[in-house]
Length: 494
Image (cartoon, rainbow, N blue to C red; front, side, top):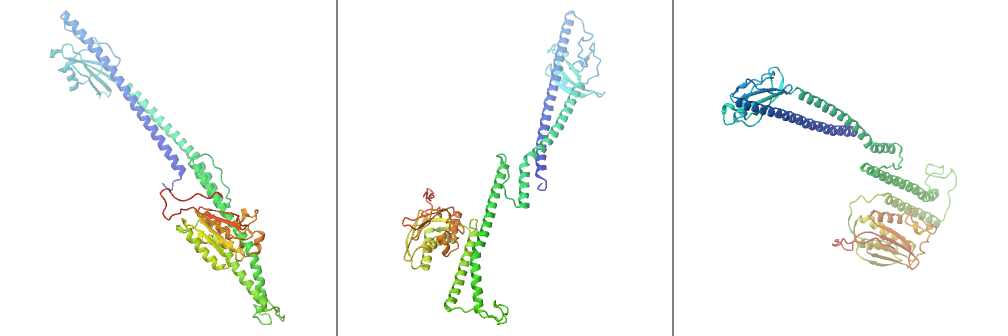
């Protein structure tokens, strides 16, 4: 069935369901009406037979009073009904107007006459091929005398009943066929209308694959298909956001890489001219023209050039590393593991202290446990501390506080301008004052990404002493084992 189109399966299912329902309803109606017709036929036969038996009793009573023997019974005619009067010995009596076919009696009929009680029904086919319905009732003229035990048998052709049932069966079949036709139309309609949102979703998917256009599709209704379309739109939005992130990252990276690469190329060209190994004929590898003198620079300038190249190489390495870290826009692929944020903060402080021995670090750290990626969290904390160390003056103090999952790092530098506060965690954003400082402009963006990937958030403000105050909040708990009440904390409000 997997290779059969869904629309065909739905149409077939609706047709089968409605067709079976119509067929069952038609059969039930046919059986009910048939039983009612047969019941009415039997009731009519019993009434006529009872009337005939009463007339037989009346005529015998009258003959007994006058002392005569009846030559025949005078009974009314019931259309095509045959009337037979017989006794328990199967001796029949002549009826004045009975011209119908001979009706054989059975043991059940004779038992009615012999017992002078009960009723016998049967349907038989006569020698002439006519089907008849018979009923036998007792006359009950004199139950004490076996010689007087008689019964009346009425036989009526079932031709009219069979015709009625035949017409009813034909009507039921026609109704069933019409029902199946209606079911087919309904199935086709349901298949078309019900799967129309799926068709739109399919067309939208093919359009996205063909053109790369990630605009959301229109959602109609609130049913399951509408939810599917909404989920598809959410996927398109996430994909568009990811593509936009990649485009902006590539554009920003290209812009940021252009300046150090240009500067490095200039310095390397100059060093190549100074230390070129080519012949004076301008062999490959020498940027000098044939016969031109090599530039002369002092040892101090030469050392400064080499130092610039090394610094630019370190800057490029840092920038490339930050780009690789930031390009992981999704949550970490590694399985989360238990992490004590307090231990990570202490390790990061030790690392930054070795790089900036001229600074003091005022640390107050409380344990805070969460599930996360230790490497990502350590990189984020280190970036916060590196930023504080970069802006702190010599002999300055970097204050580090970790309370209830909120890590606050403040410095004694110039602080952050109010206009720059909303942008400090954006990629490649550097304030005018920071453009002369080393760095890629990606460190704080990595902090924000790490926070968001762990369900946290970041904030920036001015420290009470005038420096910068950066905060990182991560959800977790103060104990390694969750408390019975769930533990954890809510995000800080300020």
